Image 1 (cartoon, one colour):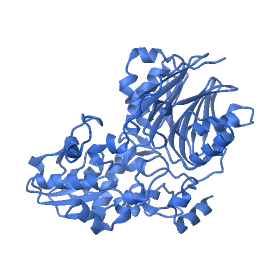
Image 2 (cartoon, helix red, strand yellow):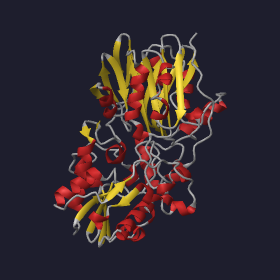
Image 3 (cartoon, rainbow, N blue to C red):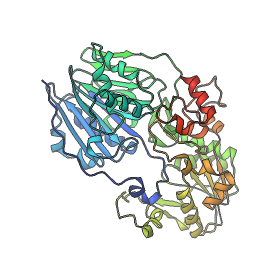
Image 4 (cartoon, rainbow, N blue to C red):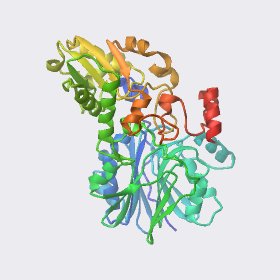
Length: 502
């Protein structure tokens, strides 16, 4: 019988958003999660740790690895950064085996306590099963209630656990069939890596909302959320896992299953705007080039009379380069970011909250003073950070401050793995452009249009006949049913769209 090595007991929950992200008042979109898997390499756990390190931008609250040594599963799951735990040799030595899966987490569903840290593991009748999930199930709560009513005993509060129970309850004979059986019950966004005693499995939801790529290293199979994780271990990129595809790696080779009705892919547009690392290639598109092109499109749509283009670091840099190049305005680092400010550097008293942005960003007066500034950022959520940075520019002597956002106004919340505020906290959902401009205190404010985003992605316009992206944060057009929240968030038009989609 297979066993799983015990992990440490529950640790106290990390501070919630209002505490941990006090320096920006929660005014950023939060990454979802990152997944990684290896099959057939003697250093599987060490390679997984390196891959997770490359994916750290996708989740900084917790990290975990599960390995299999041919007889026994081993698990190490910890709160904190990858380097806090998995850089230590003694930890990697507790994860022997030729196969492993790993996960970095930012909590969009469930508290950040150790029992919610992934990969989750269960002992099924056919053997052990570990799974890591990037995304969010829009019917996860509904499924959870059904499972609990049927007698399931949940060990976590994360939506990922329902996948374990659905696989366990399937009456199919082969594991892959049971896994596919479970997938047919899921709604929303998921990229999954799963490990059994014989297989490594990867899967993407039918729309391919969240990314997943395949690679090879010394003959071993690799799965990862982004290509930057392949780069760090020296693996060769093979291809993207397709939307609606289940890939299985075992001793006999690679097997592809396509159990869903074929659908056009709808990848999340925010992977290109914000989430993916600039050095990654997502869906065949270099992320850095896409962001630079978005900046150029923004310059075409919203020019400004200015002396210098200044990015809000770090995420606004590629778009600012594109804007400056097309506009013919010098690009300068007018804001310097302190990369060494931790989330719990100091307790968030009210007086400290008021100076929080300056701890992370500081004006470069030599660039700013006496000049007309175009500030470039990738997105605007609550507006509180933009307000403080605009004021920072004025305090540093800027004559004028023109804010330009390299994405459309965010008017709707996300339910596919991005931790966005509710609509009443989204600035663009409650104010027009002039109201937003007045709130942040800029001399002017403009956003890239939805059509501009599509042009930057290689499409002349947003057309139903052209490939689409998951862009509901801008349009309100959710691509899947919102079973857990439909009555709460949907307008009559959205309900109609959801009905058509289903």
